[in-house]
Amino acid sequence: MDLTLTGAEEEFRRRLRAWLRDTLPGLPPEPPADDWPARRAYDCAWQRALHDAGYAGLHWPPEAGGQGATPTQHLIFIEEAERAGAPYVGANFVGLLHAGPTIAAEGTAAQRARWLPPILRGEEIWCQGFSEPDAGSDLASLRTRAVRDGDSYVVTGSKIWTSYAEIADWCELLVRTDPAAPRHRGISWLALPMNAPGVTVRPLRTLAGTAEFAEVFLDEVRVPATHRIGAENDGWRVSMVTLSYERGTAFAGEVVACRRTLARLARTARANGRWDDAVLRRRLGRLHAEFTALWRLVQWNVSEAAHAARTGGDGVPGAGGSVFKLRYSQARQELYDAAAEVLGPESLDARQEWTAQRLSSLSYTIAAGTSQIQRTIIAERILGLPKGR
Ligand SMILES: Cc1cc2nc3c(=O)[nH]c(=O)nc-3n(C[C@H](O)[C@H](O)[C@H](O)COP(=O)(O)OP(=O)(O)OC[C@H]3O[C@@H](n4cnc5c(N)ncnc54)[C@H](O)[C@@H]3O)c2cc1C
View 1 (cartoon, rainbow, N blue to C red):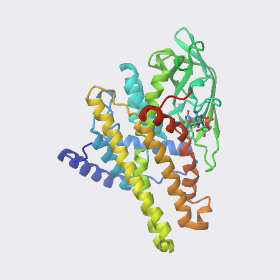
View 2 (view 1 turned 60 degrees about the horizontal axis):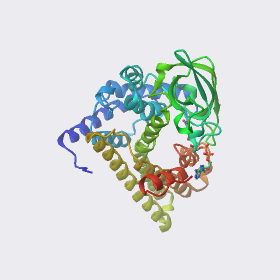
View 3 (view 1 turned 180 degrees about the vertical axis):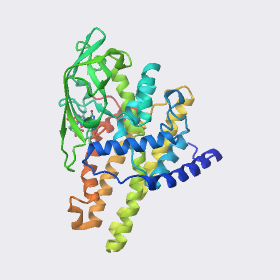
View 4 (view 1 turned 90 degrees about the vertical axis):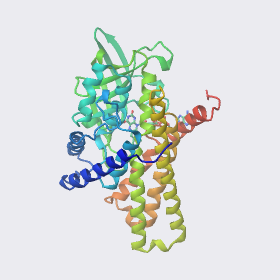
C-alpha cells in the first residue's frame, strides 16, 4: 500500500477543499431526524450539488458514469468532506454504496444506463430488501417467491428491517426463483419499483425514536424480467458482491467522523472537569489509536480492491471488509459509552444528539451482518479454518 500523495492528488485535495469552503455555507439547515421526506429532499440536493461539481461517483468507473478517480482521491474526498462538516450520504446510502456498485459490476449496459445516472444525480433513492422475518444471518433461507409469468416475475412475500423503504423509489430485492434448487442456487437479485401495485410499507420505530426502517409486504407484485441483475438463480453470488461493498467501504466516511467526535469529546471533558480522570483519558487515548488503525484498515482495503482491479480482478472489496466491520462496529459502541461517561447524567437526555447516537450505535453490531457472522467469515475465508455445518 503506497500512501504518498502525487502532485495531482494534492491538487485534487486543494480544489475540493476550496469547493467545500465555498459551497457549505449556502446549504439550508439539516431537517429533523424523523422528517423523512425532508431528509430525502436535503440528501438528494446535496448529492445533486456533488454531481454538478464533478464529485459524484468519484471512484466508480467512467463506463458506469463515475469519475474513475484513484482510490487515494476517494479517500481524500472522505477525509475532506468530513473535515469540512459536509452532509453525510444519508438516504443515498443504499443507491451509492450497495445497489449502484452492484449494478456497475453485474448489470448490462442497458441496466447501467437506466439506474446509475439517477443515483449519481440524487434523483432516485434505493432501499435494501434482503432480510426477512425468518432470514437474517441465514439469508439463504429467504422465502419471498418470484414466479416467472411471461416477461415478468410475480413476487409475493415480506421483507423486514428495510432501511429507507418509506422514501425509496427502488429496492434491491432478493427473491427465490427456484424453490427446488439447493438454497443458495435458487435466488435472484431484482430491482423492485417501490410504487408498483401490491407493495405495502409499514415503518418500524427504533429505540432512538425514529422510523429508519420498515417492514415491506409484497402481494403478487409484477416486476419486469429485465429488472433482474445477473442471471436467474445466480442472485446469491450477486448479493455477495453487494454485501462486500457494504462491509468493505460503505462505512469508511464514518470512521473519519468518529475521529472528529472523539476530539469533540476530549474538548467537552476538558471543559466539564472530567479530563482530570486519568482512567478516562487513557480510555479516550486508546479509542483514538483504534480509530486511527481503523482508518489505515480502510485505506488498505480500498487499495487492495483497486490493486486487484488493476491486475485483472473484479475490484470488489474482499473479506478484509469483515475484519473492518467487526472492529469498527464495536469501537463505535465504545466511543458512545465513553461519551456517556464524559457527559454524566446529561447523557440520559433523549433530545441530546449524543444520546441518539449512543442508542443507534447499538445496531451497528447487528446491521450489515452481525459480529458473530463476521467472525465466521474471517475464520473461514481469511484464517482458512474448516467450514461450520
Ligand atoms: C439498523 C439496521 C438496519 C438494517 N437495515 C437493513 C436493510 O436495509 N435491509 C435488510 O435487508 N436488512 C437490514 N437489516 C437487517 C440485518 O441485516 C439483520 O438484522 C442481520 O442480518 C441479523 O439478522 P436477524 O436480525 O434476523 O438476527 P438472527 O439472524 O436471528 O440472529 C440472532 C442472533 O443469533 C446469532 N447467530 C445467528 N446465526 C448464527 C451463526 N450461524 N453463528 C453464530 N451466531 C449466529 C446472531 O449473530 C445474533 O446474535 C438492518 C438491521 C439493523 C439493525
